[in-house]
Image 1: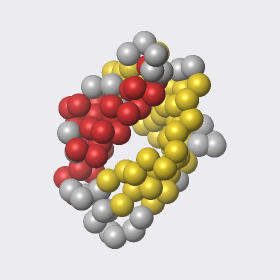
Image 2: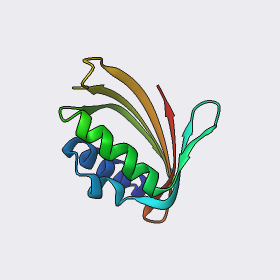
Image 3: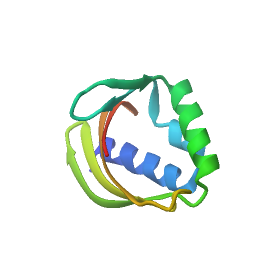
Image 4: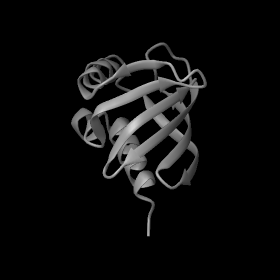
Length: 113
């Protein structure tokens, strides 16, 4: 049986790469928290803020793509290592995203860039 957390992480990654904003947001809770790692500082909270940020990101970077380099799954946590290409500034970025899930939604995300 596939890990539900990994299924949610993959669904949002696929939607991110398709730049399908509504499908991307569909796996996140209404009060999702986006945090910095390792400080754990709250960067922003809520699906509306996420919609605003990612809507702008997709519009300004239509060729952007996150390539999954590796994934670790345990219980309701998933850690992805990604290489992001196709940014409008031409720079590639390596990032780590850690997702915490509850039920059928991602409730917290930590990013390390």
